[in-house]
Image 1 (cartoon, rainbow, N blue to C red):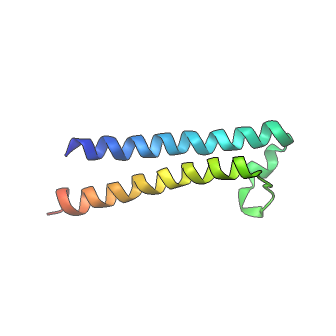
Image 2 (image 1 turned 180 degrees about the vertical axis):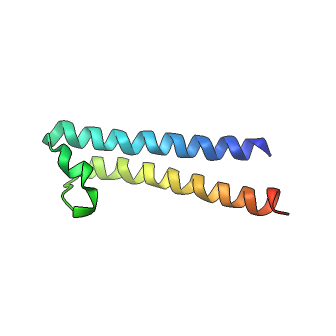
Length: 78
């Protein structure tokens, strides 16, 4: 079941990279790094492409967390 651990770490790592990439695209377009730092204040005005890239990365990170929960629930805990 080591492949589940690798799948989890891969999904999390690639997801983080993709989210950071979407923020880099935003910063290059607007020059507004403050909106990325204060992301909870709803200052980000992402284009459709940046939004889709961002959501893909977040989806991969969520998938990594779900794989981790499955691994620890069924293969470690029992």
